[in-house]
Amino acid sequence: MNKFLLFLLAGAVGLAGCHHTPRKPKPTSAVATGVEQEFMQRWVDQRAHDYVMQGKFSTDAEAHTQATQDFYQQFPYTTLAQKAGMGAPDLK
Image 1 (tube, helix red, strand yellow):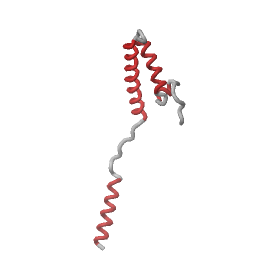
Image 2 (tube, rainbow, N blue to C red):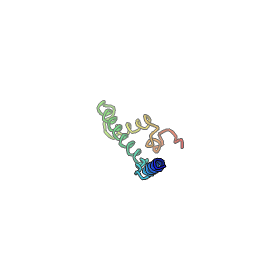
Image 3 (cartoon, rainbow, N blue to C red):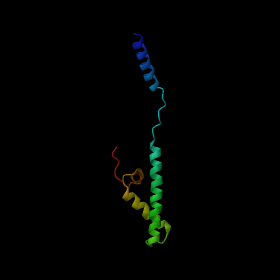
Image 4 (cartoon, rainbow, N blue to C red):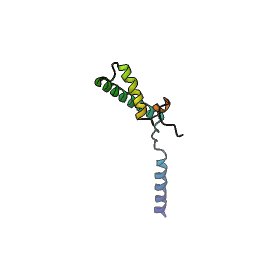
């Protein structure tokens, strides 16, 4: 009988300990948006640099504008492209 009570008590303590562990915070959509914005900025900057080096555009502003349009066409599933009206329709 004592072994049974000891086993039962140990099981109850073990289960009770699981409920008091801190939970990890869930990532928010702000994190995903920030990652997308950083990716877009790096991608557009690189593409604009390539355009200028190839001689396709004479100014950085023209190359940057074209690179931004290219980004929206290349990655239409991003929320940035959808907000700009250049991406795939939102399926929500």
